[in-house]
Image 1 (cartoon, chains in turn red, brown):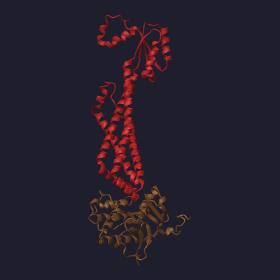
Image 2 (tube, chains in turn green, purple):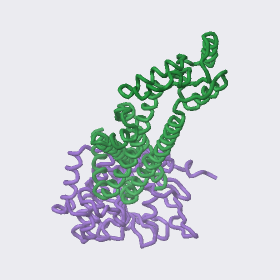
Image 3 (tube, one colour):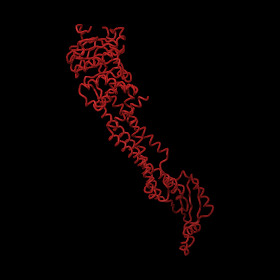
Image 4 (tube, one colour):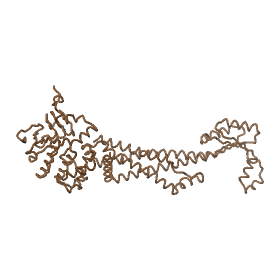
Length: 298
Length: 239
């Protein structure tokens, strides 16, 4: 076992001595790929969190054409609850709406002094349950509300929600694409580096085969190199991202985009572990596949 | 018709190497070997002589399982190496030391590292490797050149290095192709002494050579190969 480890160390040393530039370029490529992927993943996760927080305050306001009496109000509330996944339906009369508006204006409430208290329309405020907070669900609910008697119009920041949902979808696609690119990048970079190293050491490997070197003696150094390259590349990529994040990247990337909504958080330990484990696995497997293919050709 | 396998000596296992009716033809129709049979016991030193193109290198390639015969069979310790594959083949190769005619050294590696390679692939301990490499380099008068890249050595030194590597692992069988082709008489004697010592330790040595100074005299067998046909020459058989 010790002899095998020493043999692996010796061969890695020879590989590095001969092809350090290739190895370094491979390492940088893996690092950048992980950094780009992790950056978009970080944006996506934080945007998801923003979405969840915003969802907690979502409510639809159904403006009515006129004040409605208690029996009709109760019937409307029942019908809205029958839509399903509705947390609460509140009736706000014209007078209550005016009063609320006046309170919101605070010191400026004098502006309303000459206005009639009934100027604002009465409304039904509908709070959907957490299961009904997607843009499509809300749109469906809004359409339903408009079919109710005395309904005039519905407001729930649909344009903003639509934009936010589209942005989220875009981020999701970017994360997916950068994930696939990371995957391909890792596979090709490690395979290319291994192939180049094999090409520079072909004579030596042929000779080792003639001298009786077994498969482990030849393949394990390459697998170890790939393991180091992908692990180190992933670690450096994530480290670089953390550095950017902690040095104000969060301000640029998130707070300016969505001010005051969230103090952004970095990737959790599970995600970091998964990225590093995935990089290690992919790197090692692609290296082993290349070495075995070349050994079959010898 | 009796098969070649059936014709094998039932005591085959007592020979380390047994070749029976070996035939090898290279394209388009160059017959390198024709029905060559020979046997060598453990610890035996056998020289195969003959002119260039006689088939000496081909015979060594077939015995060392670098190539497979078109006809006949090679048996090593009673086993057919042609049937060995994968890990078994690699284990067999570790038991055979080969001093190639073109040396097959790694030019950028030091002299010591070239010899050590044969021991490293056999997972020998570090102390043993250092000791054995030092011993062989001293023995073949390569002291002081341990750390020089193989490419910087003279042809004679490279040849001795190739022999040192072949002998490093105390192989059961050592195959040497023109082992003194680039050596002067004194260096040739060093090689012969090393061969004798290895043979005394149980290694079977088969050397293909033109060099009469190498095979003339001593306790060894000399076979003559010409145009792919092997004949044992009683006149040059040593006493």
